[in-house]
Image 1 (cartoon, one colour):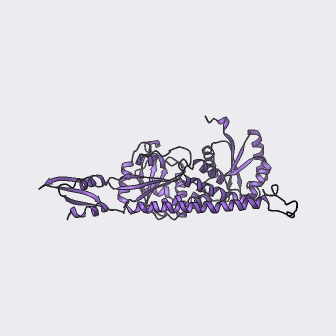
Image 2 (cartoon, helix red, strand yellow):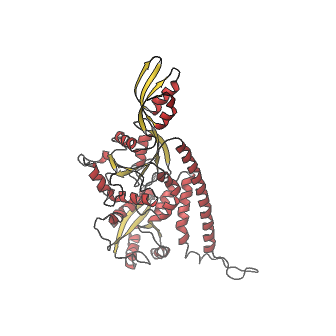
Image 3 (tube, helix red, strand yellow):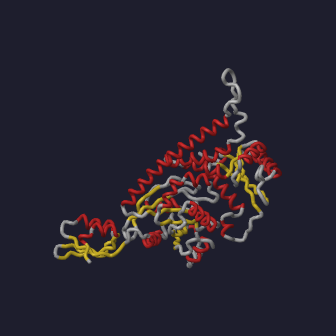
Length: 442
């Protein structure tokens, strides 16, 4: 059993850039207070199996090129490390190779940054072959520029006949090996991409729209996914509990079926290497006809988290895909916290720079199921593919298969028998109307 005594004791360190204005602008939403970002970093440490036993923030006008926080703060960190028996120091900012090397030398212990921590969590969470490939690619892309400075002590100089002169350094060997592995991984991921593309084409051959769940990590996407589909996807309070995408069918009130996909959660300062490496997975988002943007309505930083998700969606080319704002975790809200004026709340959540000010919103609880019926109705209304229209069908005797199809894939309004025929009025998707066109009555 995991106890605090066995967890890696960690100190998290952040920088508060005082030159940044706190004017509530959309730009500021993407750069929250250092306190908030550091609290999130401590949560990430917990998700990685560590124990954040201390936090330190350095206020500066600019980042120090040598150590990020300056020599005085490094000395203060070293004192705290020794006093609190710290095993690892995690910096909220991405460290350059020089900064990482200097900090490790001066603190004399393991130093990592936010990017490396997220990569470690992703490595723990990846279950499928595709996810493991993408994590390894991201890790190698992160490691490659940080090999500098590690080759001197590992240099292999030539000696003996035929080997005089400087040989290839370990640094050069490692770089070549990593570059070769990166090339192989990219080729394997391209094959995965091609396979996923074939699977997507096969799905699109059947007129089923795809709806993707997106949102900040730990917003409750997997809980909602399980509620709507009955799937057993891991729903955990830890960040990035879901990494590999999952696709399941759901039935809408109109009886038409759509595909719902659950994908990895986003986070502020999502490393570029991860966005690039997981592009194959994120294609599920870009190919969707509709996005369910899940927001933790109880989070005090919900607006900032929403802004970060919108930023990542823009980076992957999905900013123009229709969205529904799903305000989740209503079961944790107190009476009176849910405003009647949802458009006002939507505007506040999306910020001044929102691209989709007309986005529809719904308050739900993925845990209890409250509001999910309304959510399904809104999805039904917004999906344009395979549109539903009311149609009358006249089925001759022996057409039980056609009748079953209407009951299974359409909303039957009425049914009566006359002159040996079965007359059915149903709200049917276009694909079903086309299949049963010979029985349609104008």
